[in-house]
Image (cartoon, rainbow, N blue to C red; front, side, top):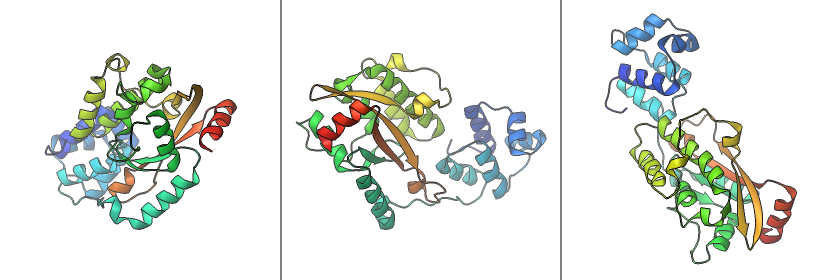
Length: 263
């Protein structure tokens, strides 16, 4: 969407959200006529109106910047390298350590691994003893879909992979200017057995938010589910796009086996 006018971007975001002009007008509490004028270029939106409409359309912060620029306004969100945010990395490391012996990792919007705790390294080292460690620049989605990755050690991989693929496709739809994210979708769909798992882009369901996965570790089944946390009200793109993913035992037997292996 970068490089095209505000009106065209607004229409595209309506399309992504499955909204008509009237739907957006009702949600944003403005007239449909005003939405039409903005899309045709007959009206120029104020900075406040751009932000208001972006929030009504659930536009991610990075794309809000593009909408503001297209409307002739300065972007709202700065972008600071994570390594320059020492107060934040210290907090992240504390949270990661506090989740042990459960796996906890930090990824960016493209699912690149940024930080992980000792439990994550121990788990992957047990599954892949030939690997040195689970460290950057590993991509979490790639390692879940690749034929030589996690799927080798999972039961019912197709169900888990289907939910992950829907999540990844929604991410790509929400960041339409992000070529790297689109290329990641195309790459994982090129792996054997992945393309049939793809479908439409439904809204997130509870089954997608709490994705279960069953691994075979040392000959024993361990079922885990994941939760994802984000930093609320972040005014920096780096912070707004961070995701903290934590893996939890799905049942008491898995919890007991996990503590025995990694506790």
